[in-house]
Amino acid sequence: MGKVGIVGVGNMGEALVRGWLEAGIVSQQNVLALDKNAERLEEISGIYGVKVAPSISMLSQEVEMVVLAVKPQDAMEVLDGISGQVSESQTVISIIAGLTIEKIRQKLGEAPFIIRVMPNMGALVRASISAYAVSRGRGKQNMEFAIALLEAVGEVLEVPEERMDLVTAVSGSGPAYYSLMADALARAAEGEGLEGKIAYKLSTETLWGCAKLIKSAGKKPAQLIESVSSPGGTTEAALAYFEKAGFSEMLAGAVRAARERSSSLSD
Image 1 (cartoon, one colour):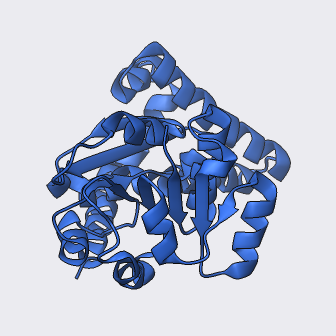
Image 2 (cartoon, helix red, strand yellow):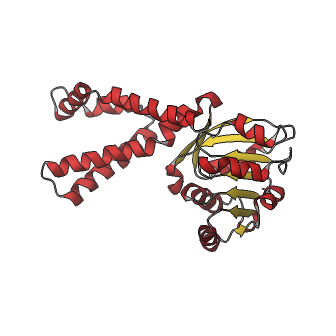
Image 3 (tube, one colour):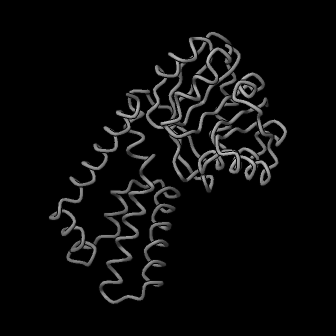
C-alpha cells in the first residue's frame, strides 16, 4: 500500500489514523499528518508515531491518498493550499461535511480521483458506517486502497452524491439522536425515582444490546419492535404514547433540518 496524508487530526482524523494503523493498512512511516493546531499535531504524532508534514504543499506531493478531515469553515483554505499540487495519479478523500465534489473539482481540476465520504463518530471505536460517492479522475486509481482505508474504521457503502446531505442527516448526525434518546430515557427513569447511576447503566446497555441484536440477527428495527411488544403490555402502552406525541413526525423534521443545514454548508 502507498502513502497517506491526512489534513486535520481532530477526533475524526485521529480515529482514521488509529484505525489505519490498528488494521495494518499503512505503517507509521507512511502516514503524513498536518493540522493548523501545532500542539494537537504534535500530540497525535507522539501517540501514533506518524510523520508531521512540513507544509500542505509538501504533503500533497508526497502521498498517494490525500485525506481532508478539517472543519467545513477551513475547507476552502485547505483546497487552495493543494490546488495545482494534486496529479491524476492521486486520490483525494474528503470527509468534510457539506463539501461537494463539484466544489473540490473547482479548486483541484479534473486530474485527481475524488471520493466524498460521510463517516460518523462510531469511527472512534472502529464501528462507523461510511457512505461514499466517487468522481473518477483522468488516471488509473487505486480504489481498493481507498476502500481499505475507509473499512479500517467500520463498514462502507456507495451512494449517489445527491443523497450525501441526507446521509449526513441520518448517519452522520445519527449518533447524537441515539445518544439524546439514551440520555432522555435515563433522565426519565431518574424522574420516576431510579438512582442515576442505575438509570444510565440500564439506558446505555439497552441501546448497545438493541443495536447488536439488530445487526447480528439481521432484523429490521420494526421486527424488533414487534417481538418486544405484547398486546396490552407495557411496551405497547409506551409506543402508543410516542405515537400520540408525534415522535415519528418530530424525527422526520429533525432529519430534514439536518439535511438542509448540510446542503447550506456548500454555499
